[in-house]
Amino acid sequence: MTTVVVRVWMPDRPGALGQVASRIGAVRGDVLGIEILEQGADRVVDELTVSLPSEDIVPLLTAEIDAVDGVAVEDVRKVEPDRIDLNLSALAAGAAMAEAACSERVGLLCSAVQRLVEAEWAVVMRGTDVVAHVGSAPDVGWLQAFLAGSEHLSSIDEALPSDLVWAHLLSSGLTVAAGRSGLPIHERERVRVSLLARLADALV
Image (cartoon, rainbow, N blue to C red; front, side, top):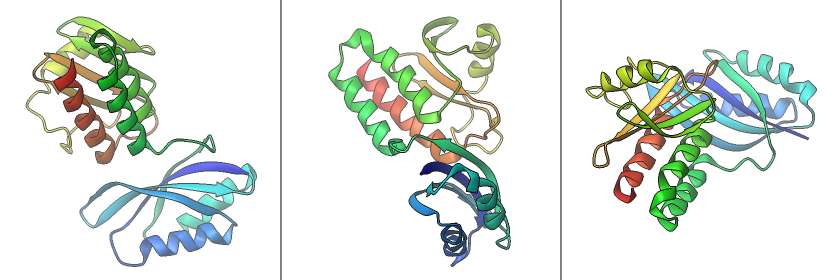
């Protein structure tokens, strides 16, 4: 058995998701979970966790879903069968921060954001100082200047770069950011990071 996550753009109309689910069933796939990542302008981006009999079926799965009128597959990637639901993971991260020593909370926030976004890197900054990081972040000077100039933007602004997510912790003066390439970051992911950052801001 193989477990994959399929990101799908589809029309925001009754029955569209049912048609996609039917196509998944036609290749002997089993839908294990559904999350709406973004919704608006008569379009929906859904993330479906699907169990397949084998990895060889992925191309056929993609072709079947793409055959549904108005539907397009954004990405398919293999994940571990025991991949934790990201909403539960966010709650677990919040609980871990609350239970940890104050000195450990910033590091926990950084690691949690990296996991939630499934990012290549994550960093927590105070001004130009990096106080926690996971992976290799972009040039610190560029990142600090970009984040300083982003304070007027909403965390779900349509003009946001698709490869970067961040949140300002207003009380503590920290900023957490994370990035990944090849897979756009959607609204639901940004909201999750924003809420976790708000919780962290009350704890650090």
